[in-house]
Length: 238
Image 1 (tube, rainbow, N blue to C red):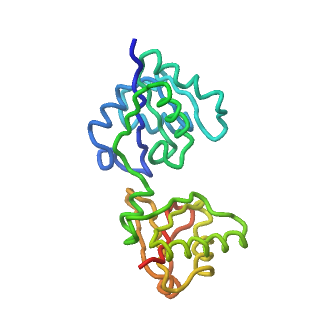
Image 2 (cartoon, rainbow, N blue to C red):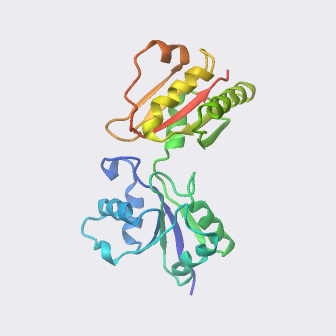
């Protein structure tokens, strides 16, 4: 018996109709899959109901994969694939395997000779980079920066230096309720001619993208960022 395929299924970045962000073929594949590996079964079931409201969620087999999953537990998640079933991998939001614990399962699938198929869908990292006007030739995603004020300022200064030296866009995220504190830190740490992009609520009706030098961030009213998912892009290049 041949192994199944591990499908990497993108999840929405927020509320909105699936047909606006996911191709029909992706939705069709997801509707055929009965085995899933997910970060959170509750939110995954809510998401999958959008694919096919008529489906019986109780019939779907779901296994959890998150930051608490031990490396020794990964092999068991591949068992349905090795038995010939297709499996869908979903992140909490966005693309599986990108800033996501699913990357370890994908790597193990490759070592077992299991086909891995990434499906088209929204990536907050790439969408923010596309809209920033920063360098798309060289960029890095850093995830979360330090929470403590001192280390955070030093890290931002380091990112700005690297951006200027290598003409490189620097991308990072923050816990939504600390978004305003992040903008304050960038204003404190970086030069006035360095650009900051904030991409908020991407792909939703409340999407807002502001990309401008810090001098303008300082002079103009700030958009509403509190408790809104956002991606930050820092650019001090040419």
